[in-house]
Length: 115
Length: 112
Image (cartoon, rainbow over all chains, first blue to last red; front, side, top):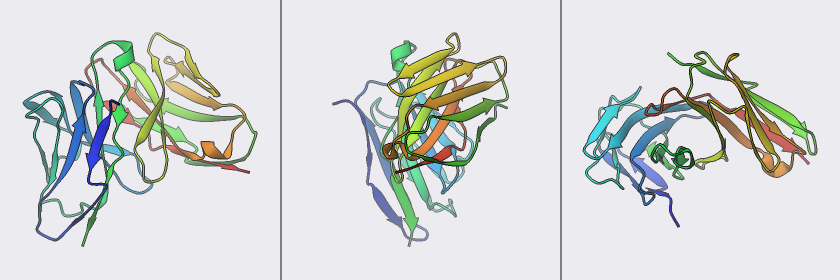
């Protein structure tokens, strides 16, 4: 079955530590996105990538970094510079320009907490 | 800058009731609009996508309408069930290659 896989489901970060959240898709989608969701709030865009080896900052990129070395993978690193990382992180992807491929599809999310 | 608003923030209804969720956006020049459902601690599930040239889309008990000129979309849920309890979010896309702008969602509770 095609889909978006995020791992781990739960992640704990110690102060000063960098952690990496994994996002893999087997949908052959071109564009991938990382969102942050805080309790009772909407989604805020962290980074997005429309093609391999290219990515752009979203609205809240500070303290985060990404890479897009392969079409199917878009890992997110939460660095020690991100002082308030506790949140639910969602990865999403979207295909080409055909109507059937234009739905934004999401992974199941990673809950990051600070120890 | 596009802004998306969803009112009400929370809604509680008895089982069997028909209900409408609202989504408004400030810039009417959109490419498409998508409705999502989110269960607690889960990712978002796409429900319906409406292209800018369409007026509505239907899937089972769900019907989404789009009025670009007034900057509004509604999600109609017929004969609500307790299993419909979730947060519903709408998102607009302004051009074919742009990112989506999300509303903050409406938390729906359907009481048995």
